[in-house]
Length: 187
Image (cartoon, rainbow, N blue to C red; front, top):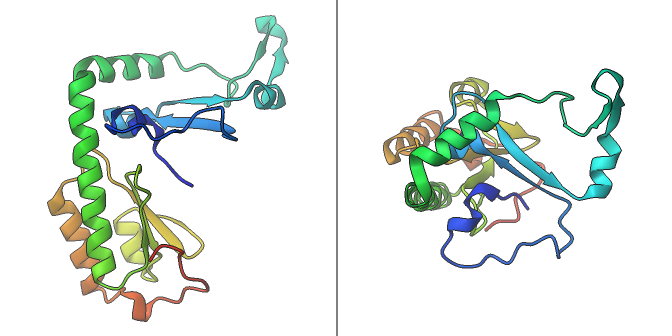
């Protein structure tokens, strides 16, 4: 199940996801929520998994447990700045806006007969992959196998979603022209 964890504290209801459950890790892409000019985020995992990627770094005289083997000092500053500028209320407004818009896109796609998936606590809309490579490139769609997804971030407007949808229909990339080996379990 794919969630965008940065939004969990702002849902208004308690989505009961804790490390008491069999959760291995939680990642937050702060650049998606806060609009940072560079990719940055936070990754939390269980200690047993940290040990798998930790290695001794002689010149630091310590064990490095970072994913990339480096510590980018700019990323925490961007995260702090974004949190400080938006504040709790501003982030909550962004979350509500993104949830509403993600549901809007899901509904438009479903009404057009496109198999679509959206978890109740997510802003990631998953749908059948279009065959048109130019369309995929133009919208910078993230695709895996026969699925594509869009993360509805705060800057994404209803007009942008309508343009995407209209382009999808105009290119005749609807279900009848897609060749999916399996259907998504989302209807």
